Image (cartoon, rainbow, N blue to C red; front, side, top):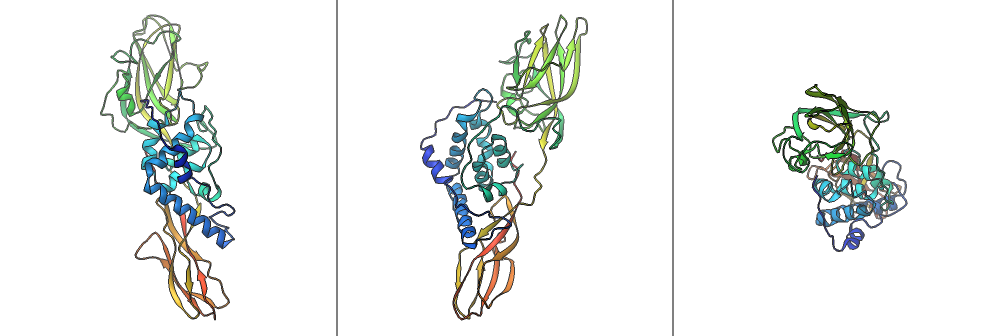
Amino acid sequence: MKRAHRVVSGAALAIALFYAPLVAGQEQGLGANDPQLSAERSWAVQNALAAIDRDREAAVNALIEGWVPYLDKAAYDPWSEIKPIAMKAPAWQLLGASLVGDYHTMVNILRGKVGAAKYVNALNQPQAKKWTPASPQVLGDTTAGLIFTPIPPCRIVDTRGTGARTGMLAVNTPRTFDLTTDGYTEGQGGQTSGCTGLPSFSHYGFSINITVVGFSGTGGLQVYPYSGSIPATSIINYFPGAGALANNGPVTGCYGCADDITINAFQAPTHVIIDVMGYFERGPYIGSSTSRVAGTPVAVAAGGRTFVYSGSCPAGTVLVAGENDFGGSDVAIGESRQDSIIPERWVMWMINNDGVSRTSTTYARCLDTPIEVP
């Protein structure tokens, strides 16, 4: 995928503006037991979301610039790979992604493959950054499944064509290839447009059909993730007189990377043709994390009654319930429901039969339902 070099001015200011430490001390979800701290934290989160919506590009630039020093520059280019995703992600997911310290988790939160709520609920400031060269989830992982999405075969590589990545693969001279739509413009000799279903993002793995042709000696190909290590096994072997040989199967990619796979020819040079048959992706997020979104506190006079509204559930969550912290010895709730005017918030009819004014804060209970960003 294409490289891009950018300079972001005022990055430190942007980070301070959008990702300043949140109010500490309370988890926003189930079990929050200090009304004042819970409300203050909720207001801080809502302010952070509003700041992101006011200047999304500055927020995204701050997020990416924070990661650049920690990434393997030979494999990752977050400006071209991640920024387009972050610019489309809801502010809720962008905020959650800004708080985690693991790169792959950050990307999955942005893409809506991992919920943001548990991170927004629990973390008060961005965690220390860490990057590991291997994806935490690879083909064959026994702890988490991947979903296969088949596509009509797309010939994304044909080294018999013209371009920077064409020509016969020389012996022990690894060459990288892009199996996404960016491969159209990488000079790989394959199709330059029109593949139905070919992804634009580098996924965990791909199903490919690989063909060797034009060889004159005995040899083979080793295929491995971009930026990975050459394996001891081969995906296909060839010998004189065979003409053209093909094999198909899954290969592990490089999640969120600038390219997808590397191919090494051993013993004899050959041309390579690659048809992408589909890709492996995390399934939809399924979880039960909720967050409390506080509204403006309302003073209910002695003997008074009024509607009190929660804050609005942000995009990437859905309203499922409401609650309040209306204290007193003789107070009641006359009605509790989803607001008919703004469906993302909860409304309660508060009745104060105490002899003194009481303050009520209503909360929306918002269930994490991430919006998937391709």
